[in-house]
Structure formats: C-alpha cells, structure tokens
Length: 198
Image (cartoon, rainbow, N blue to C red):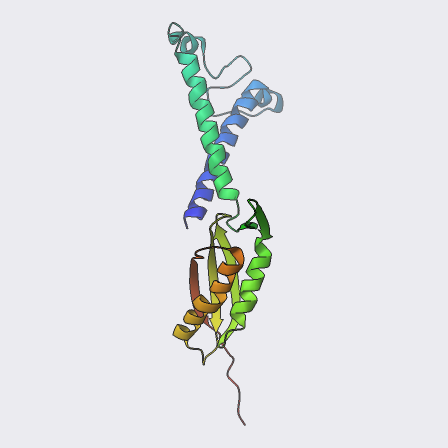
C-alpha cells in the first residue's frame, strides 16, 4: 500500500513538473503563436520575452550574497532527495547475492536465487507441504527468509513449523555460516476440487 502511494505521488509530481516545463517551453519557443492556439489568461509565460524570474525578482535579493548560493543548495538537495526517493521505489527487495564467510578472511558470494530454490525444495519435502515459495530479503550479510507454504488437508501446522525451524532453516543457517536466519512464514491451505463418487 505504501509503495503504491509512493509511486502515485511520484507520478503526480513528475506529471506536474512535465506540465510546468512544457508550458514554459511553449512560451519560450512561441509555439502558441506559431500553431495558432491561446494559453489561459493566468499563465505568465506567453512568449520568448517572458522569463521565469523577472528583473524585479532577480534584483530584489541581489544585495545579499547568500541568496543565489542558498537557492542553488536547496535545489541541489531537493534533486538528490528526489533521486534517492526514486531509487528506493524502483530497487528490488530480493537479494541477488548472499555473502558467506569462507573462514580465510574473504567472503564468498552465493547466488540468492539458488539458495531460495534449495530452501524451497527442502521445505516441499516436509510431510504435509504441497508447495513452497521462498524469497530472501534484507542485507547480503544478514538475509531474512520470507516463506509461503501451501499445506495439504492432513498437514499439522505446528509440526511443520517445528521441522521447518529445526531442519530446513537450520541447514540453511549452517551452510551460510550464520548465527541466525530470521524467517517470516505464511501458511495457506491447498484447495482441492471435490471428487465425484459414483
């Protein structure tokens, strides 16, 4: 929900800036006169002679040496903030690599998707689990497993969670050399079609 709201706000901000820039460009290139259309009366930029900041606005703070450095600093900070916001929205949450301590002072890199597949296969081998899906998130040195398990009708959820922690996740922790591997597990039931008995 938050990601959707962020993307909508970012899209609206982009559209607003695009409309503002396009309107200034229309006036700067005198396109309304060339193409024979008119702009609303409240729009300030009607032709090439109009400017974004008039001479009165430019000269108003000219005596203070702080004005232009402040404007440039604020705009640069705003640009950096917006680029950071865009990067956080577009980056993927999944881990592509996990760093494994190889005990020789260097870290080996393990493919995150391969580790997800191994944990999925291990979880699906548990009695009562019909299907499993695993996604690794977090940092490369401290991954977090997000698991979704689809259970058969005869499955015992408490027993499955216990074996998942003691067997599946323990093997993953040991192979990665981690003290802990937090996991968020979501359980769902498999829906079977009713069989007709004649």
